[in-house]
Image (cartoon, rainbow, N blue to C red; front, side, top):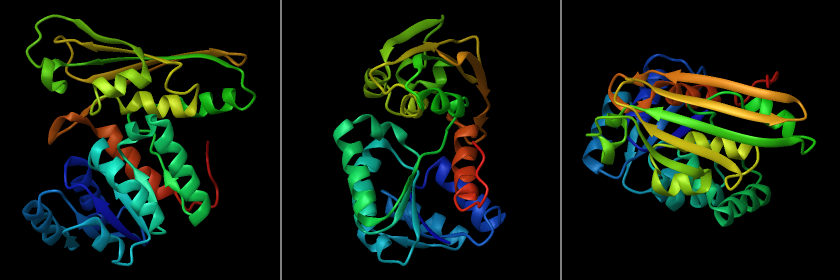
Length: 261
């Protein structure tokens, strides 16, 4: 499987190391790279044995089978439809882009028309299988997530000295205010009740050094309480290591004949 990569940040370079150097995706290789900063993309492409491209159109013509977006919500919104219209499968790292109902509808329409697929990694959380099961008969009543992060992981609030609730409301509003920090709420809402009905609380806490997510859900199935504490990537405390791993796992499981969950 030939892969294209949009984004040369922490997750992008992690995937290049894992796939192209460590061989953790048998039969797969990232062969094409596009990054906003051309000089950085060229350096990284040379390091990992890939070809850099100066625009996404050129990348799409490089005979890739699937494109990985590992950049930003803005980049995902700018390039995703073009990738799908070009007949390529797409793995979205910036899942927050799907909070836009019009955008999501366009994605689904193009996928059906062009027989392509979009893959959404679980990111830094768990429990999605429970939510999807409860949703199957529309018997999911409530879903909420409380995210607690050190101030250093929330750039605008890096100097806070005491625990502070930064946000409390819907996932739809949370992603607007924290587009680079709360993708987890959107994947949770896609698996469950939608972004308007999924409740989110974001806390900056100077007494913690790791990101944590506490998920609660209830319905006819019973109750779910799940807490995930994430180690940051060594290269960047703002990026969850589990989020990067979930992208790799999604690629590894994409073509499995036996699917779990």
